[in-house]
Amino acid sequence: MPGRPPSIMVFNWGRTPSRSTPLSAFSEALDSREFVVTCELNPPKGVELDLLFEKAENLRNVAVAINVTDSASSRMTMGNLAVAHMLSDRGIEPILQMTCRDRNRLALQSEVLAAHVLGIRNVLIMSGDPPQYGDHPETKPVFDLDASALLGAIRDMRGGADMAGNELDGSPDVFPGAVVNPGASDLDGEIGRMESKLEAGARFFQTQAVYEAASFEQFARRVEGFGVPLLAGMIVLKSPKMAAFLNEKVPGITVPDALIQRIEDAADRRAAGVEITAGLIRDVREMCQGVHIMAIGWEAEIPRIVQSAGLGVAA
Image 1: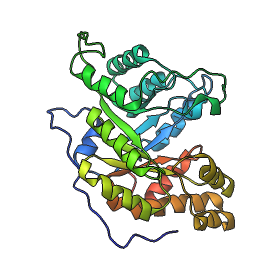
Image 2: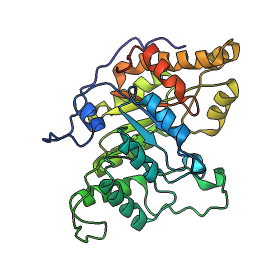
Image 3: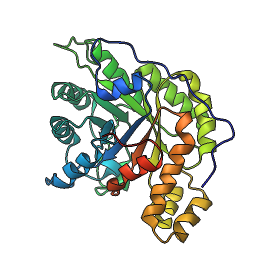
Image 4: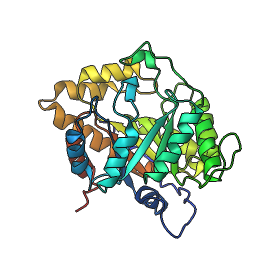
């Protein structure tokens, strides 16, 4: 496990504009500069939601909000708008992921309006994984808009008009965020895209998985001046095979050999994965305003990760 970097930064993240009523618990937490925890759940490949609801209940007092993924990794699942609405009805705040992969500008703008009327206030915008790597490789991708263009459309819609300049009969009030990859091979280009997303209206960023605190610190220093909340991504390691897959197949992720060996040698790999993630959270805590934990089937371990990281669990 890498140690804490020698110099620790405490960022003066920018505050969101004040409003008499917070847009969401998530936006309020970021505005207050509270260190936040988010995580994510995948809708089912089918119509049975009991397991998802069970996982969500287990996370109710751990995460301020839960991302609901949008056919993650281009694998078809139940539409996440319905799942996000049902979580909201249960008093669990969702962050609706919206990808540009599967829908054109008509459908994407329509979904923003639908999210608003269903009471969903947090949205996370991303391009989406190419469909040829998913479970329907023959799928024709759309990519009518990229993430910056969709963020700009949301900004315009919040101002009362659609992308074509047509006036809306009531404007959606949502809190938009985006993603960034601190380990991108072309970091200058990635930071440039982050700046474009920020200019288009992104109010927070969740990152790709972080496994090296020192390299994340370099990225965080470079974007400190943007004054936007940054949530460091954490994918819980399960096995050496998983680590090898991440290193080989996922751009921008580097799992150090020392962590792979630690998982290899562990008598209890689940416990090792929990402690590795908790240690990384401790290492980056002063460099960001929160963490986004992606447990990928091990969601039951997220409360233990949060406790072990010294963040506590809400009563």
